[in-house]
Length: 98
Image (cartoon, rainbow, N blue to C red; front, side):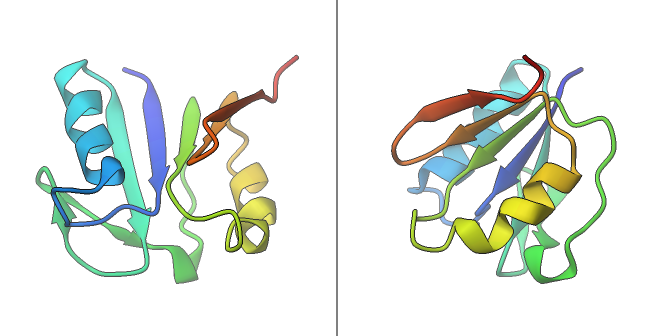
């Protein structure tokens, strides 16, 4: 089961971050929701990004926060040592292992 961290997780079912968590579970991936507000997504607690939670064995990070707020999280994202990062809304994919 591949572990995917969802940065910008939300309880709002109309947001892509919410929908992504559901699709990841459907395809037997392990979503790890991290966001600014408390709540649950598909039965999984949203971890507070302000606490920079440690997550081991990360395959992918999907980023659902606007470009203006992304740079403040770059150091944290890289500390998770993902194989790849998918930046949205631009939908750029960065492969960190090549």
